Image 1 (cartoon, rainbow, N blue to C red):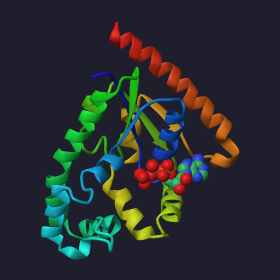
Image 2 (tube, protein in one colour):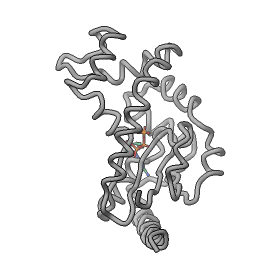
Image 3 (cartoon, rainbow, N blue to C red):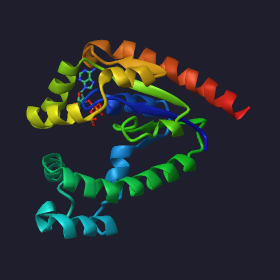
Image 4 (tube, rainbow, N blue to C red):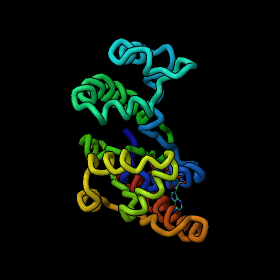
Length: 206
Ligand code: ATP
């Protein structure tokens, strides 16, 4: 396995935004959210299992999984959440590790919202945390997801605390400032970290 930089942060903190900048520098990104979608694609055995359990209403008209409905269902029912996690977690983990292994670049950015919660830090050589004030998280995530503040709050409280995340971080990007006024500064931070990760990856190889 090559050098793995784990990237995590709470809901709406800016993980995807930061990952996109690394990607523009040519860094391969393995994104848990994308892998989680791939394993339940139309026609996949896991999607059939989900329909067996939750019924046809868990599908959109086009046959794809209705992810926001599924999210609501599992946040409302601990047992359903447990069932789904037992089904998906091993499959997602296996698919992510396979993708991490395939990369040829000096390092890979592994974006996982629940990296700490799911005990995946052991796979990482370095941990990068994207951090914002909880109020900003709530505001950005609810703006993006149709203003469902209660659901976002619920998700936030199910995630590890900001403090616990920061304690584990090797590097932190503070993403509070509005990107439209702060993109230069953000780019500088990403480029500095990129140089650092290239150096550390090389050291690991030697
Ligand atoms: P999730 O865990 O919910 O998938 P995330 O951590 O990947 O979220 P993003 O999707 O990158 O977070 O950001 C959340 C929202 O906030 C997006 O709509 C994004 O465009 C916006 N956003 C992120 N960073 C900033 C910023 N610095 N200034 C303004 N808007 C931002």
